[in-house]
Image (cartoon, rainbow, N blue to C red; front, side, top):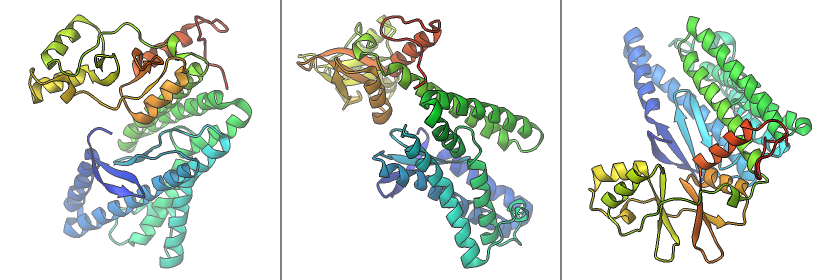
Length: 372
């Protein structure tokens, strides 16, 4: 995630802190100092660090459950509104998704129970309202907040865990796509509710509303793309007319090519037209500033671009784009020569075409997403 810093790893998963999270801690410290002096400031900071340790444990509940089903978990990022664990894919089997989704809240249940048993913590709503008080014990505040995290995350709307639990249950009867549409719609409605309440109470709810709405919309689009691409041959969706670059040509030549075309990504190929990398428009502009116009393309291109056969399916290409976080997938013939490209923009255009078609109509190999 942009603007985040890697602070280490736990069990093979990188732990990252977003710069806004650091600014949030600084703001909490300063606001507490202004209200109650040094004691309140340090007490507030300790509580926030302990709270986000609980959030991190919540995310690792998801991560460890996902690993049981063979899902890779590259990293987790701490944000002011919580944590985001990146899974290379979301299990589509209802039982698997249910267990991965419920694992996070169950961690918070265990933490609250441990605080109650070991320290006699009181998780009542009164302690939740007194999180800024220096007279309420840290154990009481943490127990109350962990119970709140369980209740909040189990709201049956995307992107909360409750939304994924709801989708898993609905998928048993309605299929993955239709279940996602329902859970995403509930998530968007919840976002409007959070935003409206935030206008009159806590402005933080407005930011949460924006995050929830965008995440719910994104999840619905991703599932629709996967459904749409399931029966489409990649040869029918790949870009076949594109300008290419060579590894040894200078950046200034690449810029000239950029100005003659409307491409976003440029494949870099060797003499045998085998894919060596991809250079994006943003990479070119950044390279001009950092290494100059005479630097060769090979020094700034993105390497290790995944490739697949031209006889594959678009669903496979889309899955690779998601999992590898690369700008494109190269489509090659049996000799390894580059014959096409699939990018996120390509897949997005396919989805627009699919959604624009009248119900029951097919154009080429694709049509409206089916409720599978």
